[in-house]
Amino acid sequence: MDRPEIILAPGPTPIPPEVLLAQGSPLVYHRGPGFGKLMRDVTSRLKELYRTSSADVLLMTSSGTGGLESAIQNCFSPGDEVFVPLAGFFADRWKRLAEAYGLTVRSIEYEWGTRIRPGDVAASLAEHPVKAVLLTQSETSTGVIQPIEDLARVAREHGALVIADVVSSLGAVPFAFDDWDVDVAVGGSQKALSASPGIAFVAISERAWAAADTATNPRFYFDWATYRTFAALPEPENPWTPAISVMQGLHAALELYFEDGVDAALARHRTLSRGVKEGAQALGLDLFGEGLEQNWTVTAIRAPEGIDADTIANRIRSDFGVVLAPGQGPLKGKVFRIGHFGYFSELDILRGLAALEMTLERLGYPVKRGAAVAAAEGVFSGTEG
Ligand SMILES: Cc1ncc(COP(=O)(O)O)c(C=O)c1O
Image (cartoon, rainbow, N blue to C red; front, side, top):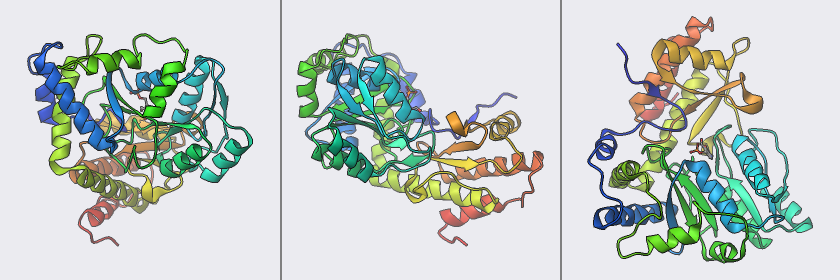
């Protein structure tokens, strides 16, 4: 019998039944009071999540990358210089996006899995000022949560705008738009909030609006000023036909998320992350990346000697219907990744770890049956070791 796949990847994450029902409900027409209320509610919840009272939050029909592209289109002119510390696949996406719009990208290249050192960024900006620093909070390719607060401080001290990709981190790990003095932060519906893919959200500071007023990069679909005009209508709208069903689902997802609140969600992500990490280590596997204590979104795990990581990801999927993420770039075949943010429970993690044990055993790796599950249970019941 075909069963739904069990997603343990870093997005899209599993969708709660309440969200599925909401997005399967009759469409709310996108001009008028029904959609206006959805937009008001979603925007106000997102502001709470971003921890901002000063920024505008715009909602766009797009995956996360469209939100990133909107930042490049709206804040810059061809020839502007930006700084992008490179430590993984998504930082590299910032670089490629910026270059596609004619920006000059300066960077420091770190080995993947490294936490970016704010001191390095400070030294580089002191030597050569730039208009903005483009950051990635959760580097999904390595699992590393980058120190955005410190990096933002350094960037601001050197007069640069701070533009952050929080697609796979908003709602999963701490973030504070106002307190950290961030200028643009781009999130997506399909990650920690566990709605369907299709809506990007962008928080925009006064400074970023000022940059947008003078920037000359071409823009149309993602023109922030157009979005702002429509969002300011008595019944807020999108300029274009939005992904109405996804918005209905996102509304339900945010209501669910805020039933327990941000702090509870963050604590859950931390606990699930620890369960995965302890579980993998109990099987004798090595974890990848710096700052493991803070890396609550996704865990990159090194494949054991002699087994290709893609084989593990393929086999666990074909045998058990469990979707893990393979390694990207230089990590291809070396690591596999388990996502543990969004609508996951402790039991979801235990079932994933059980499938991992059986998969590794089938691939000839010596497994002590139940070791990963027992270690994770220890974390969840507070009785480790
Ligand atoms: C950190 C980060 N940035 C950007 C993206 C791109 O988002 P999307 O696939 O929604 O365009 C992802 C998706 O995995 C991501 O993890």
